[in-house]
Amino acid sequence: MPHTENLYYFQSIYLIMCGAKFRYLGKLSGALALAMAAFASNPAIAETETANAEITVVRPLSFVIDDNLDFGSLIPGTTAGTVTMAPTGARTATNGIVLVGGGHTPATFSGQGTFNQRVDISLGANSILITGPGAPMRVRTFVVGSTPTAILTTTPTRFRIAAANGIFTFPLGATLEVGANQAPGKYTGNWSITLNYF
Image (cartoon, rainbow, N blue to C red; front, side, top):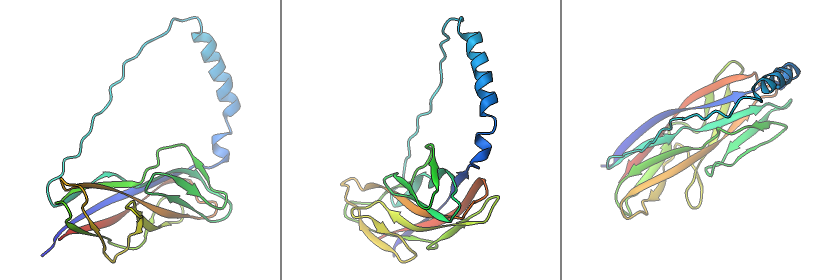
């Protein structure tokens, strides 16, 4: 009998209204110039910041999420379009959608089985809706970063664990459908992925 692990997680996206970010630019640049002039004669200041260290520990015949699927930030177009997050982390857009900044990442998972063990991976649904202040947006075409890449669906896709120690990782990308003039704000949703070890 196969061992099954289920994992649920969310994804998020931020939309930015084009005009709202530039309205106060003149006032901001004037205030910034005054602040810079005030501090120009002061000596340099040194600061110390703390950073985090992380590690993911997995138990045999399990898997965990390392990163959530995050499409990052965008400015919507006047017509509907898509944003695709590849398993490699590359992000592309269509139909006038402008991709803004960083912060985007494919979902990544880690697990452990045994060398050459068969693992079946499937999704709880072939697409989901993420919700926020505007109309819901559909996330579809989930792609696992295997060699070659493969589209994941509710029908299990079979893989073999190639690492001698049985530890494996895999990224997962998807495509987001963005509406014309999509309302700004944060949009989130949940989806599930299942691994069966044989």
